[in-house]
Amino acid sequence: MAAGDRSVEATVRQALAGARRWPINLLALPRYGRYQHSYQDMLATRDAFVASTKDRITVLHLGRSVDEEASALYLALAGSTVPLDEADRRLLEILAAWCVDGEQPAVVPVRENLALVNRVRLTHDRPVHVDTVTDVLRLACALAGGDVSLAEPTRFRSLPRPLRRRLLTALDDVVRASPAKLADVHRHRER
Image (cartoon, rainbow, N blue to C red):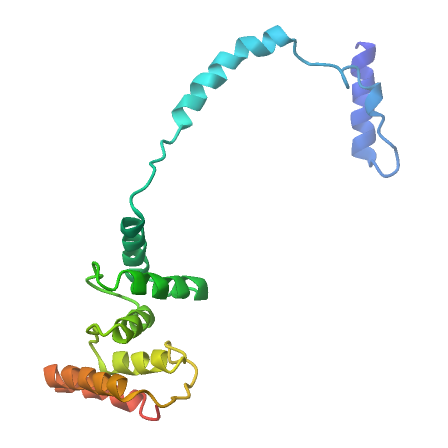
């Protein structure tokens, strides 16, 4: 066994015995602090690494116009199948106002998101899209600044007459289309 191998072996034994008791002398290792490879060795292996990096390059596009990007993000947020967090809800409302005259999502699966989109549409004098009596209640909560998930009670404030009239018209349209949807009223009768 060479003298360098013995010092490495002794250092490993010290480490296994517990470094707290025995300080490890890294300078005793024969190759510590010295270059392991020459410049020529590293240069010879460089070509293999350069070839592999070309496989990982992703081409980025510059993007579309602001209106197209905003519309795409609005449709993605409105069409989300999971409830959004607070920051994304605010962004959804901003984008709904931006895209109020543009393309609208065919379906908004999350009812809380639908209430936020309908609030923006209602304040911009556009038709609202409600399917149930609970959707109208969520819209009223959104207009009152309350919880659209209906988990917390909402204190309803007095709404301007045109908004009240449009809410009642939306409620009448839902009931006229399917009177069986009045069954939802009993679940939220206090509100």
